[in-house]
Amino acid sequence: MNEEERQELDELLPWISQSVEGHWQATAAMDQHETTNDYLIEGILPRTGASVWFGAGSTGKTQVLIWMATAIAASRSDVPEWLGHAIRGTGHVLILSAEDTREQLFMRLRSVLTEMHGFSDQIAREVCSRIHVMPFVSMTEKEFDRPNPSLFAAAGAWGPSETMKAIRVFITQWNDAARRPEDRIVGVIMDSATSMAGFDANAADAVTNFFFYVNRLCQALGIFWIIIGHTPKVQKIDHTNPDADAAARLRGVALWTTAPRTTVEVRLALGPRARGGQPGRNRKPTPFEAKPVIDAGFAANADDVIVLRLAKSNLHDSYRGKHFLVRRPGGLLEYVTDDLSPVDVEAASDDADEDATAPVVTLAEGTRAVWHLICELTGGEVGAAVSADKISRKLKTCAGTIPHLASVKFAGTDNGSPREGAANWHLKRLFELNLLVRHKRAYAIAADAAAIAEAVWADELNTAR
Image (cartoon, rainbow, N blue to C red; front, top):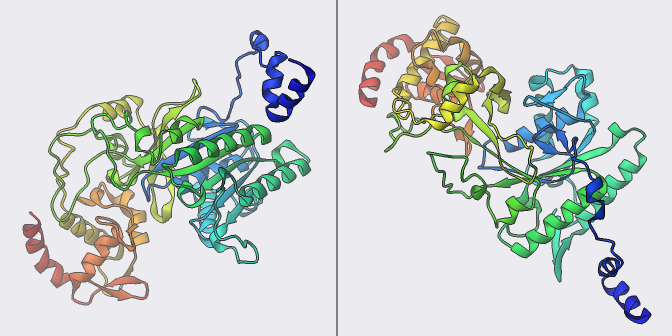
């Protein structure tokens, strides 16, 4: 190759020119030792590179990752581990959101810090100062004058948008100015792929360019980048082995699971769920994953149990076991895996339970159980106020003394309506039965509630059966 040809090659493809000089030879491979500190959270979160955490709507993905972000931002003396795994460093975390408002995100942060971590006001404020939140839907047009917060755009080939470039500049400048390693931004949480990527999940060329860019950005800046993904509206789960096809449930082309360093699914645990006024019936038995959680008294039914598990990983030492979380009132989460028997967890995941596939408690019996709880808490006093939150707080402690109370779910909503079988759903039902009357934003016991209860339960239960 003459000098003119080499110069032309340098201008067009400099990396090829380097190869001619042996730059890419693997001679140094024998000097490469196994990386022993490749995780920021041991076995769960790689220190650098893209990761995807996905699941169906309303399974708690955002809450889980806000919880993770606060754990990373806190000092190691306050939070040494997360979900039972050691945290190998600390730093600032940037949350990008095009779905929740600033107020919603701040309320989530506040509840995670004060209720889930149990931090004092001073420590909570210190952690908040290490979380950066960019809530695009709450930004004014002066603050953000772009038509959308898409991070990628098609200008010929798909590439980073001005928004993505600006975010990169922000992280770079912040980290350059950081005086201590723990003051650097160590990661980004992007909520979500649907609202911020800028392309359809099935556009293979865009997905390829996006992950190539993000992974190289992470290597250059020394950060992780978590993308919240979704499943199709109609999920196909192999109930005999729900984890076998987990990666296939992520919406989009295969690159969504092969390009990230790790892919994690967040889903509801398998188990019986009541439907309508009758017990749910399945044609064939399915694994009752939630059984050890329910048997231990942490949850009333499978609707309140979340399973978090690795779907795919490019790292050989990723943790591949299941994590169990329980949904609490107010969107809070409780980690319970360490309090369960590993043997019971494995058995519940593998074995079909004939008896567990059809719950024997109807919704009507659940409503009656809530009424008994109300009477126990208030003495049945006419005018005594009750609320869904108050009922939810007593479900676990009173489940052993009131028949069928364990079937009642914690208060929650689905599309703006009370979640079927939840505490607020049963309160609404009691109101419809005239046992309760409206009282400000809650309910109160009606004047003739005792007589109505005596007359209504027999017919109600007979109808349900």
